Image (cartoon, rainbow, N blue to C red; front, side, top):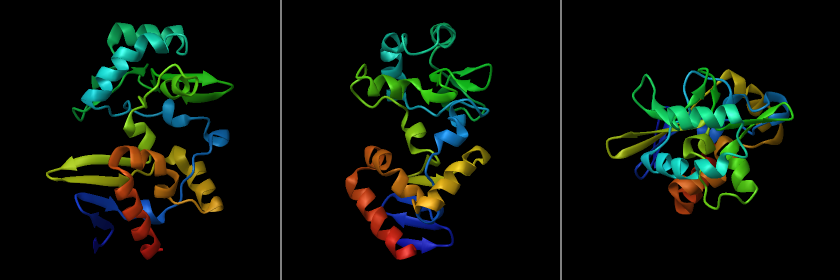
Length: 194
């Protein structure tokens, strides 16, 4: 473990220390899923995710709005943003085309399809599942940084009230992305930093 300034190194991962110290727990009752309909860019997607989402698109048709589904068929499931990254298609430059509005709250249509048993594997982009952690490959290292977005203020408040740290809230996606051994090591480092 290397600990300098605001970064922690665990093998080939460089972690923003705030992932271990800050609080976070999504509060959909307050934010209404704003991360699905706000922003200037879609969710970053990998080549494997693009292929999987493209293949799953017909299964998502009954879940997505006809307008959003039509847009995905017409323009594709992703595009290159201004940084040159592949990201999910947006509706009028705002809402993710995979988002679904139900009861005044926006949900991930991919996640809803999984919950309803229509998709068997986790197809929701890992970048969405890991949020507010953003990842970037830098040489041989993977950088995990904490992204602070104003719309997530309710999540930071709820996390503090319930005593849930960022990495604790994101246990399942961190294990999905990097494995259980990495997560267990992160937990141990988190105990030392508190």
